Image (cartoon, rainbow over all chains, first blue to last red; front, top):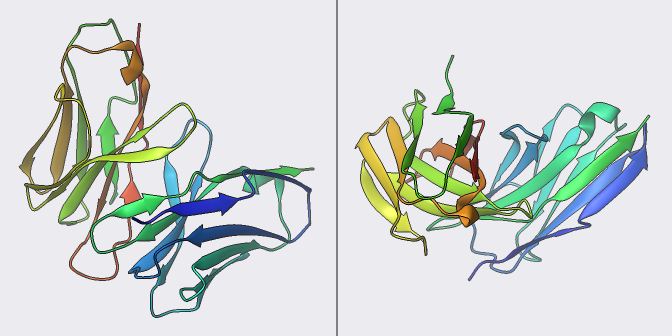
Length: 110
Length: 114
């Protein structure tokens, strides 16, 4: 049974810092891994999707990596801004269904 | 706009009532989902429909019944609402059968049972 863990549960950084969010999963037989952002009172926004055959994906200041063999993914945020404050969810896609991590709540302080 | 849209955004109701939440996607996706986000912000899948057929049905009380009249719609009907049903419910859709599976979510329905 696939389990997805995100560490840390919460992170607070000053504006301008580069930071890394971590996601680990127990079953390496995955199809893909997706990072979402959830803003308070709003829905979920897809940030990056990495296929199982890929090692990383980039979008603007975001870079997501995937290491299937070790069961890990990281989301790197460069030059963080207060607008990046949100909860970031890691979602692993397998043969049957998607499994969600519990998220990392990020606060970027001005 | 291409999107996953769900209505209503907020739903406040009394215990024991029956209510429905509607979801529609115009993305041409073949699979739709309902997720429940609990008080700890943890998302749990409830149901998944592929081409109008139920493919995932997690341990959810029988009071919850999904209805998929066509590929673009997946509605969630809840009978005899209980206090513990209070949560945010998210609809989502994706393509399956490929490795893409990019999941797109609706904006959520906040259900409050009084």
